[in-house]
Length: 370
Image 1 (cartoon, helix red, strand yellow):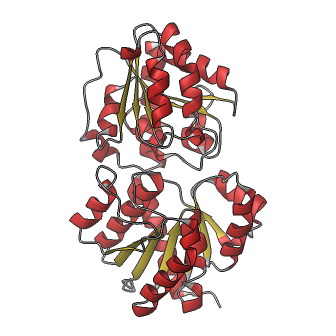
Image 2 (image 1 turned 120 degrees about the vertical axis):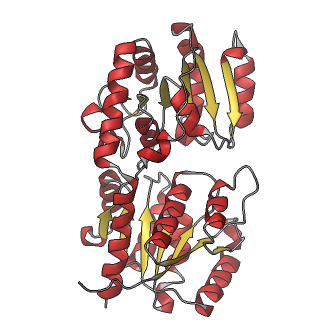
Image 3 (image 1 turned 30 degrees about the vertical axis):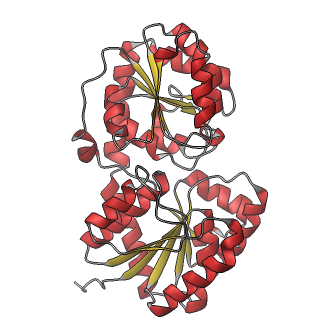
């Protein structure tokens, strides 16, 4: 059996704050280290401050090199380009992988011109049309584009006109054993949990609008909100207007979100568009049901249990009714939670998904594109 070549790999991401793409990038870096490769992580943005630096701490503990380009603003693109190019030129990797739109576009202007094959990463159905155009230009310079779900692959073909032969689908994954180590006893007062960026994309405005109806229909429940973002002040203001603000707890950014999932009865995610949300996979691994929308990637995650846990896209009243129906039925909660856990264990094991990235890099470096 031929010895596998150990690779020097750049993993380029827009920023290293806490989020699904950032977690995937770091998971991949640590996996590659475990396989004997030499990854380094490049963040276009600056080093995040606590408590937003969890992913940076994970890399530091494993001594994975990190390069912060330190240019988070769009008007700093020329400076970011120059810094990244100088960095790569001084110490070229064998292959590079980019995550998220900004990193895709930036990496496409640097790595291929230095004869370093680039693998792009499409993770969300981006609604802004100008990004489709620039994403399409970037994809022309990539050796492959990894899509996080088949829905995103279809979107990439349709919106960015990327040929199907350039695409491959590698889903997100979770480690159920790691999640089990954070297990908590369910809270005596049932919790409806939201975990995510406080942003309209995640439907935070919908959650605020529907909170009175949820709390009225479920008088024994409380709502816990974990995350940070541009809508945090609006969330705090709206909660204070409720008849009983004590029934909603805003925790901000937390490192123990998984423990809160174990304590909760159901995950709420009235999202507008996605790719394959990590938070839903994590909730499923915790053995709890979700109330979400049937947007990109959700059907692939939930599989045969889709219809019982989703509302149609942009049908917010339907979503609210769904959340109440699930939370009102102990039998349904237990059944869906058990089915979700089985689904994750059989289809979304983290190690198996990360191995697909490694196999792709090995194939591309052994058989580079002309």
